[in-house]
Amino acid sequence: MSPAARIDTEAVLRAALQVLDEEGVAALSMRTLAARLQVRAASLYYHVPNKAALLQSVADRVAAEVIASVTPGGGWRDLLTDVAQGLRRALRAHPGAAAVVAVRHASPQVFERAVPTVLAAMNAGLRVTDEEALYLVQSLYILVTGHALAEFGDTPEPPAAPTAYYDAWFDIAVSTFLAGVEARYGA
Image (cartoon, rainbow, N blue to C red):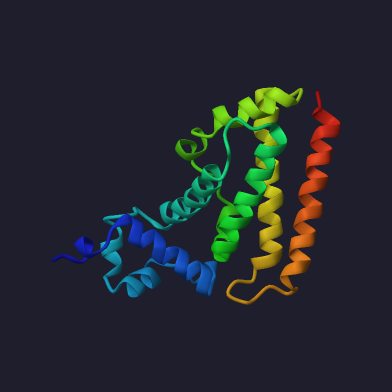
């Protein structure tokens, strides 16, 4: 069996997330992944064309988890709360991914699946254009990612403060963001 046949794209992505979580973004390389998967680095290129594509897959995986956490049919506040909590859960599960998500957007094929749900919720309860609605979701995504970087940015080092500190900070940041959205765009 060829080395490429012993692994698949999902195995490569899982290994990348493990490296990110255990060793941090600086340690992620095709050679590191190959060693972890016990294949030659060249075998990885059957599954991902390059490191940039691998990092995009990480960002897309996190975004897909966030999108899956959103309950369709709710109001704007529920949607934004679902996004914030879903992203926080995803980044807590994979703290090393925070550094990737901070600099890579979800690809259009991942994000566009969520657009109808986002626009329906945001337009139902707010005075926003479609463009503003999407910017608000992106702004919240950046807020939560920045918070995750503060908590996990030194992966593999543990967070500098206790979990309760980050929980309180998250709650204040998100509730303030939501209050600002309501004050500026409330119907």
